[in-house]
Image 1 (cartoon, rainbow, N blue to C red):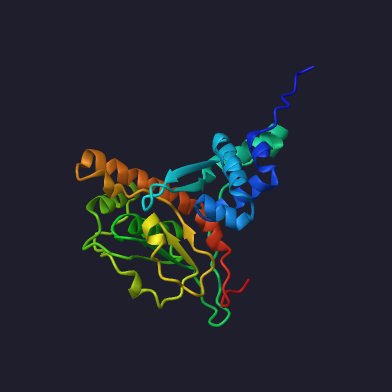
Image 2 (cartoon, rainbow, N blue to C red):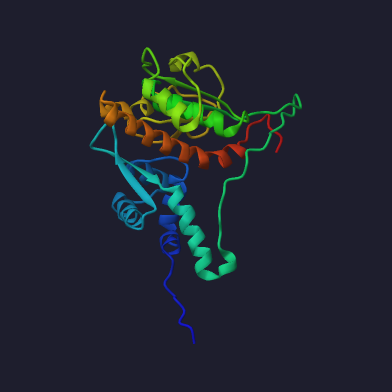
Length: 266
């Protein structure tokens, strides 16, 4: 008889606990701090911290020190690792259940009022609007193929987009954004957006309150410009930043495909 490996897959062990499933669910929406998870889940901090540690040890969750307050940390769900873990879970049960998950294409959403495509509207917010947020704007526009209205802005925009942000878009993704200029958040505060995504920890505290938005999303991504002016260190930091944003956008597209607003026909 062929021996059967009855080891429970990591994802099953991690996700089966109700509190850990709640943590995974919340972190699938946005990066969070411990106190935010405590409030959202209504559980004691020591219990939340304990299960976060187990999820980190299982490789499903990572943490990163806040760039705004280094005493705090943001926890992030590694969606790529989850996708591979789910695929492995299916295969462990039966070869025919091996999964190869891929986010669906973004469908054209029709406005009931005009019959024309009603595109989800996304705002990326950062402090300087010179690196992370313009890269996110360009990559989402590129990946969505015109199916999303996307813009970016900063609370304290710099005079120009960082040269390495433009370079990484051009060299790594074939996107020409050389004519782009940083803009202020208050210039778009009166616009309506379906999703507000902050990409730096500092701007999360000062973002204007868009009253009609659902819960804002936060991606805690280090500032690549902090690597300094030496291109040998700076450009690789921009490359890593763009790759992380591109991965997150890969998993954002299915969320945008199911965006709901009063003008969209379901």
